[in-house]
Length: 121
Image (tube, rainbow, N blue to C red; front, side, top):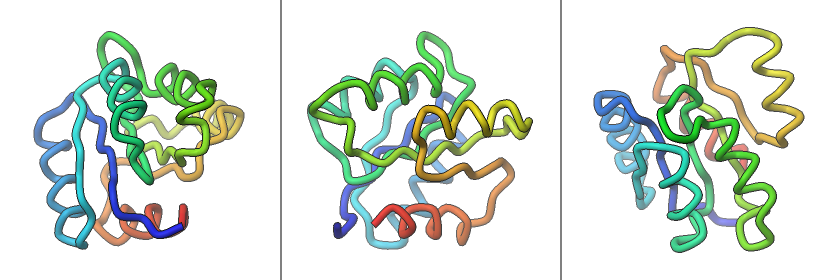
């Protein structure tokens, strides 16, 4: 699968802007959301090729959004990469149980983000 469109989900504006700069700078089209509920709605409407998802967000966190996206027939094939400051073993195990395709902890490098995206192809 050729990756062209990436949905970036983060409620912290500086993180959202930084990820968007990294991803668009690598030639991908970016779409953004600022909470998990928006991510679920946008993923259904736009069908991105990959989703970069923060975990700690208001309204619906990244784990709940990942579960909703994975449980919907229209979006279940979209790979989700969690980009989060949560670095506990339990968080990683829960992410694996949800079927995430990648897990990048903050702070990250641009190479880590781009490698996580290309690993989903």
